[in-house]
Length: 193
Image 1 (cartoon, rainbow, N blue to C red):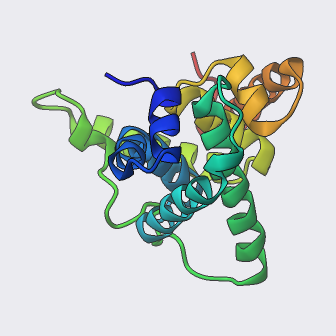
Image 2: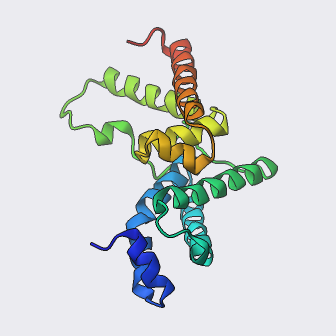
């Protein structure tokens, strides 16, 4: 398997397949970041395409030997921030009345438990909905750190590089985001173990 830096160099020499390989490798992660951030499949697809369009245009300025993935995620994170600012200007309905998107699977559809009790199903759905609502009310800088760390598996160092913030700020944002989510869920459901 070619390294990302080798693929970038091949692309710069005119190899169209090299850029296609970069896109195929990183589309799932970029799409996931955009979807987690927007909670909208079409917007996530648009942001993913725009990310790779910008990468294509800027690849000639990419410093050889630099880590590609953090640079790529920085572009996607900036596009998500821009999208968020635009959404504050333009209001639209994101969620149905239960706080879930129509195409998003319920938590019970992801669990292998064969016969959960109806009360357990209801409790799980309520907790999932409350967690999703709480997540959407996190400040933008906390949401991005949470998505990049828990969903995309980026290290603290990579997140610091992607968001252009100090390493300790990444740690602080994650800690505060978890505290914030815990407080909201405890208010709704009582003490969590």
